[in-house]
Figure 1 (tube, rainbow, N blue to C red):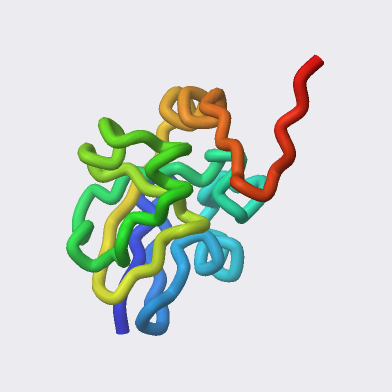
Figure 2: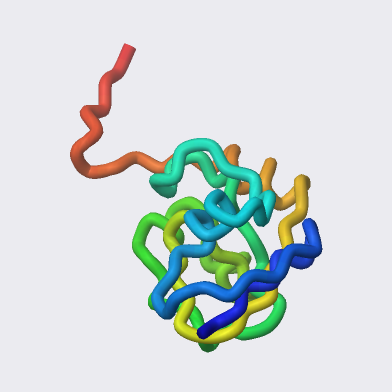
Length: 114
C-alpha cells in the first residue's frame, strides 16, 4: 500500500491505491489545511517533495488555481490529487495565501457586471 507522509505535521499513513491526498488527511488527521474540497479556495495547496511521479494527471482547475509556475515546482491541490505510490508533501502558509488570491471562474458560473 502507498504511504503519504505529511511532512509539515509529521504524519505518515498507509493508504489504499488511488487515494486522495486531502481525504486521507481528513480521515487520518494529516492536518493539511482545507476549506472547500473542490479546487476553488486553494487552501489545500501542497508541495509534493518526493513521489510526484506517483500522482495522477494535473486537473484543469489546478492549472487555473495553482498556475504553471508552481505546478512546475511540484505544487498540487490536495483535494484534486490522487496517489498511486509513496509521496512526501509539505505546505507553506505564504504559498497558500498566494494561491488563494487567484480567482477561478468556472464555465457554469454566470459572470455579472455592475
